Structure formats: structure tokens, C-alpha cells
Image (cartoon, rainbow, N blue to C red; front, side):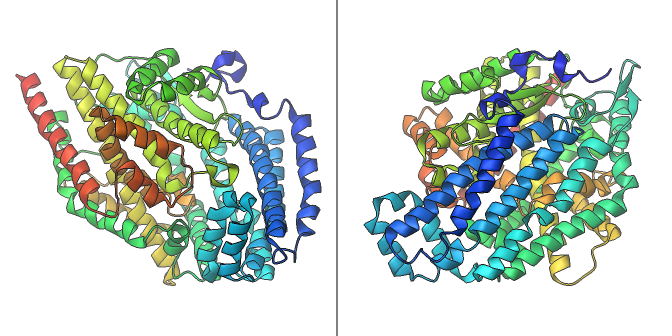
Length: 601
């Protein structure tokens, strides 16, 4: 069973990069034009304090180059991800990276020079020049980051490190997506099937335990074999984070990651502490899974198979997108109309093809529609992935349509709210449509899996990430053996005594791409917790809650992220949303246990 080639796919299920650039020649022409713009930016050095109009000219020039560079970079990255073996696409991506570094160097003097002006004068410039209003947020942020912005010379050196700083991430990406092969296994029917990342979770959902185990061992095999190299890559990434934190005079990499968005570090640490208080719920779920599956040695490859067996259903992409559209009806036509355009208008690259980047993501591009990478295999999980990624896409769409470029790009902290909100609405709609006790139990099991994988699992990742940064920042040695033992310990704590912590799961740290982006993963957990509260309000029929949510999607980064969520109706600085989320989980567990007992009779 070989992967389908891109040329064999329907045009409507491949994204249309021509909406960014009609061809590679046009892309190269824009790259050369942007390179030619950089000296003009450099020429403005030393002018910012002269007047409000001089400040406006510098910020406008920078913003316009940044907007064009985003489009150039998007085309290069999307082209590369279509086929990570394509040397021409890889070269264009590197050229885009080089240009981004050059732009960072050319603009590196702006923040230090702005800070040579007093806070009062900067804000007076904004009040005096209407054109600076769109830059108020960035100016206020620069003022707030005054203690962490270095001299122009140091900022230029830091800008020069940008490309080098991505080396460990790039090496991991190529190993993970292009170089590692996972071999073949026999499926439940005895057919020899190639193991790919796209098929992996489908194998884990198999009711044939031998298939689950074989796929699990196959996917981990290259990571186990290369864990020394992968450990060195991860250690290099953490050292990079520590270097930037030190250089910018933050007490830790955690502070460096959270402070620019005004996220108190307590939000991160409280998430971990709260999760430990609620671990008994996860242990209860794991024990239930072990009991229902009727096995004595529950392994990680047993965590994804549905507890309620349903006839295997393979959805076409058309069926999947229709389910998503129907589920999001409570958001009204203001949301559903552009959503329908995005689902049918070649925003997405749908199918898994040779060399294509694994997983899924959405990429917003200002002034253009968003782009969505999928690896569709037809499972219900893939339907949820469409809902998730189009949550991101619609967030980008509304922010791009409403905000000026300087405040359009929402922060990572709120990004996962829109995606997991859509998953909540899809679950609710599927439950509403079904009166089959078996199907409802299946869906509740799936909802519990979302809580397990998005709240508990991502928080476990976040705790591991905090630990490995503390190891490096404390001057201790970070070895593959240390990483493996610490990760195994956390798996045991989170999942409890009913899960066997085997060799494969102990080395799972070596295949998590998000660890190459400092302190990213915790936001999946906080995002789902916020999304559960917001979705509950919208599903209650509260039109004000719906309108507040749509305003949130349109707000970009016009406020600090915690404040945007408060405006939408949820405050993550309180315990209320956490308690509500785990209260929902407990109700799901009660319902599932009752349903399974009834089905067993």
C-alpha cells in the first residue's frame, strides 16, 4: 500500500500557492526586490528622535518589509513541506531564512534607538501622529521590554544568530520527516503495509493488539537507534534558549518565553500544580481502559484504541468537511460562509504524499487566505484535525480581515483556543445527532481522549520541558540517559500504576517536534481549558457569548492575550476554568462507566 503521488491528487485537494506567487520566477523577483529595500531601512538609523513623522516612516518601512517577507517565507515553507526531499524547495526556504536574518539585522537598531527616547516622548509622538496609532501596541511593548533590549551593536549580533539558532530544529525536521523510515507491518488482514506517521495513529486505533504493538515498535525504532544524536539536538536547543534568556537579562528561558506577552510564569507553574491535583482522574481513566480491554499489562500503544468498538468508518474528505461545517453552525453565517470558502477553495493540502511533512498545521498570511496542511487518512480523528486546523485558519482569516498588519498576528497563547473550541463544537454536534448508546459512548470516550492528550499529555510535556531547561540552566549535564529516565518518571507519575512504562515510551521525548520551540506545548492545555468554557457558553445559545467569541477571533494581538480571553469570557488567572474542565471530565467518566456497564449486559 504505497502513498499516492501529488500529481495523482484532485486539484481541489491541493493548496494553491499561486495565490501567493504565480511561479518561482515571481518569488525570486520579490526576494531580490526585498533585498534591495534593506539599505533604505538602514539609512533611517539615527532619525527616530527627530519627530513623530520620522518615527512613523521607520516603523512603516519596517512593517511593510515584514509583511512582504511573511508572504515570501510562507511560499518557501509551504513548498518545502509539500516534499521535504525537494532540493530546490529546500534552497528557497534557506534563502528566505537568510533574508529574514538580514532583515532582522537591518532592523535591529530600531528598538534600541526607540529606547534612547523617553517613554513620555514616545507616547507623545503616538498622540501627535495619527498614523502611529496602529503601532501603539508595538511601541508600548518596546517600552515594557526596555530592561531586555540591548545596545544596537548587541541587537545586531543577536539578529545575526537567527539562522544558526534554527540549526537543531532544521536537522530534527529533516531526520523526522525525510530521513527516518519506519518499515512495514502486517495489518489486521495480514497485508504488508508501510508505516508512516499519517497511518500510525490509525494503527494505534486498531482492535488488533498485535497491529498496535507492531506499529508502536516500528515508529519508535529509528528514534531509539538515534537517541544519542537526538539528545544532542535537544540539548543544543535548550542551550540556545538559555543563551537568549541570559543575553536578554531574563532570569530564565521560561521568563523569556512568557514575559513578552505579559503571561506570568505562575500561569505555567500553576497549570502543572493543578494537573497533579487532578491526576487521580487520569489514573481512574487509565484503570477503566485496562479493565475494559481485559489486559494485564497496559502499554502506551493501548491508550488510543476506542473502548467502544464501532464498525470501521472511512470518511472521504468531502464527508469530513461537511461534518465540520454542520458542527460550527452555532457560530452563524458570519463564520460559516468564509469557512465554506476555505474548505472548498484550495486552502488545504489534504493527503499524505511521499516526502510531505507529517502532522498538520495552519499558516496565516496577511492579505491572503490561510493555508492548512493535512495528512488525511479518513478516520474520525482526521475529521477532528480538520475542525482543529480550520479553527486556526479562521482565527487568521478574521484577524487578517479586521486588524492592521501590526496587530493582526495573534499570539501563540490564544492560538490553541480557536482550534480546540472547534473540536468541542464537533463533539457536541456528533453527540446531539446520535441516539445510539454505543456511538454516544464512543464519542464520550473520544472526548476523554482529547482531555487526556491535550490537557494531561501536553502538560506532562510542559513539565518535562521545564525540567530539561532547569537542568541546563543549573549547569547539570543533560544526557540521553538523563532525558530518558526523567521522561519515564513523568510518564509513571501522570498515568499511574496501571500503565507499563516501557522502553519505547521512555524515549518518546526524542520524537516530539514541539520541544524545539521553547515553552510552546503548555498552551495546548490552557487553550483547551479556555475553549471548553467558551464553547459551553456558545452552545447554551447565548448570542452575546457567540458575539464575544467572534470579536476575540477578530482581535489579533490588539490586547495582551490574557485580557483578550477575559473579554471573551474566561480568566485563566483564576481556578474556575480549570475546575470546570475537570468537572466535565468527571461527568464524562461517570457517563462512560455507566454506558459500558449497560452495553456489557
